[in-house]
Amino acid sequence: MLEHLHIKNVALIAESELYFQKGLNILTGETGAGKSMVIDSLHFALGGRVNKDFLRKDTSAAMVEALFTTDNPKVVDFLEENGIATEMDGSVLICRVMQSSGKTIARVNGNIVTAGMLKELSTELLDIYGQHDHQSLLNPNKHITLLDRFCGADLVSHLENYRQWSRKQKEIQKQLAMICKDEGSLAQRMDILQFQKEEIEQANLKIDEEEILLEQKKRLQSMDKLIRYSVQGIKLLYGNDDGSVCDNLGEVTHCLHEAAMLDGTLSDLAERMENVYAQLEDGAREWKRYTEALEIDPEGLEEVEERLQMLYRLKRKYGGSIEAVLDFYEKATEELEFLKNSEEKTIELQKESEHIAQQMRNIAAEMTKIRKNTAKQVQTQVENALHDMQMVQAKFEISIEPQPQFTSDGLDRVEFLIAANAGADLRPLAKIASGGEMSRVMLALKTVLVDADKIGTFIFDEIDTGVSGKTARKVGEKLHFLAKKRQILCITHLPQIAAMADSHYLIEKKETEGCTTTTVCALDREASYLEVARLIGGEEITETALAAAKELCDEKDVI
Picture 1 (cartoon, one colour):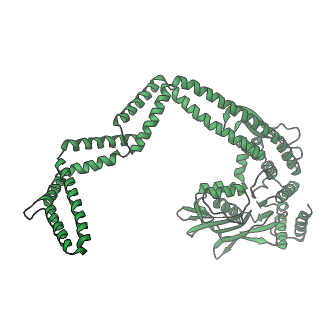
Picture 2 (tube, helix red, strand yellow):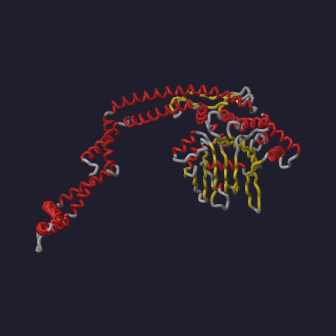
Picture 3 (tube, helix red, strand yellow):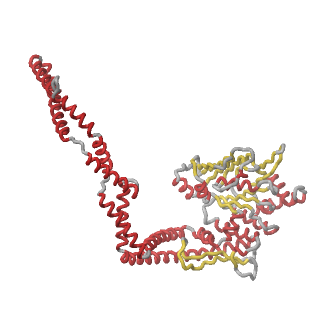
């Protein structure tokens, strides 16, 4: 449920904090007081778009914080999948800020998230019904989704299985489309693949070849210096006017051995020096052999550079690295073989496609059964709810007709039909002219849906459109019933609905020193009587209106 809403610098609201309760939370106020700002603020907090007028004049940023508590496992899954910390008490704190530049920043439990992530999360936290929901209810394409929400886990399992097969079918159709291109295009594609395959094959690539070639290039480019340094080093080792390093070290070693024969303490040093001399001689011979083999090789350098240029060309064409080129080769080889065997492959794919289609038909048939069985129950429940709200002759039907083509939802076309009056034919909801009837249909659906959803909060904005009198009272009673199972927030201007409040909030617009602000405050029972009386009789609250208000409010306790 929505526990707390903190609004700052939103339109006419300078700052307001609302602590909502379980049950039916009613928001009332005069026309133009800013009742919709509360819902707009919540809509913004949950990822909705707003225009520049959302930001209060002469302020740098608008902020909305919404604190929810929930035991919905889908919310937990969402948080964990996105690396967001979960709280032991099931609380979810959402904060979204809009700067004067129009940029927005949102956080969930302190973690920055996108507006898209907020929208995804919001579908599991609350359900807002407003004018735009009329449009979704009028759109038959949305009806199958609504019905499926009633069907529960059994349908979800089938639907997931069906969509897995559907994804496989799309891949098969993609492969068939590739094969079934005109022969000229197919031959052209095969020629291209064959050329690419041969070009990479002839290169005889090795994973670490580029690094080796670069090292060879460096060596060959510096060959003159390498020869000069090596010759100079060998000369120092083997001979110059002052004697060679090897000869001198050999003499040193001899002297040290002679000294050790006179003083045994030098024996260890003499042995170590002997080892040094042996290593020097070995290293000198190895360096001499290396130096004798050195020669400037311009042709070898040219070959290395040509090889590197070929590698660079292949990398540019096929992926940016030797690994990518080899991966491209594997894929090109597979596709070429696939196309070479196109006739046999076509027959194989067509058989596989028919098998998948049969699996999809079987699953779709099971989904149809589930939908039809559920539709019967929903029809009865919705009709009963409509009868409770003074549409006593209304008939409601969920039409489920087969479709010739597979869709993402199976082979069913679902549409909600209604006959609002006795003797009337069942017609699509879009043909309903009365906003009051549409509001009651939506409320009836929500009343039935409450047991199928884990969503903890329902919000109704303008649910009282087109209703009054006894009908308004029945709508209020239905909201009161719904609020026993879910938290309800409802904006209304009708006293019959406001009187059903478990918690009542008054939205007022005030002008102070030329500055207009909207405030929201919670009403106690006596203040709620006065507000309901105002809704009954206008600004001047009479004793008669107050008595009527008390009677309306107190009747709620015995429903």
